[in-house]
Image (cartoon, rainbow, N blue to C red; front, side, top):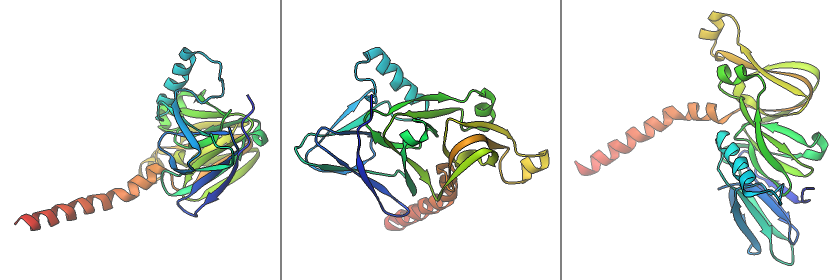
Length: 254
């Protein structure tokens, strides 16, 4: 199934949203809960499947939906369709500070592998499926990257990354990266996890026990602030807010 051709614009700098303009009868699919606003002529429907195989049976849809649960995503995908006779707009917001990356899948071999929290929305006709890292040890010891998502199709897909995004083109090259900083990569890239160094470096280096390795020819997207690091950075402030809140309440009732 060829994907719908959609027009879009990305709004904002550090906390972005993507506004998509749909022609009559065009559809965009998105993660449940990511919609920010939509014109009155947009109709939305939450479904088990991504719509890439319209004639598939109910059992296959359940299997596809179950595979998304394994990646930590919602069981359902929301379909937004323009039911009006003129162009209508719908917008999707990024879940945390960072960048939205538009990817034309047709230019990247119609195949893209992304981290399980990276997908935001895509043109109808994009297939979203489970991708297991063939090196089981990479997921077991690295903690990230064992269960990924594969995006397949001919149209536009939008992925989200935290902080600043770097797009790198590999020509039979190898790069070592923090495991959480990988957003996605094309099919020609081989992904693995290896020890960060000697025992002293692993324990006292502050870089974690393992690093990801990306090797091959293709395109890689990296993020400077994965959600894991953002949560770790904000957690001390969360404790202070809770303490101050309790002190204020105690003062009110003394």
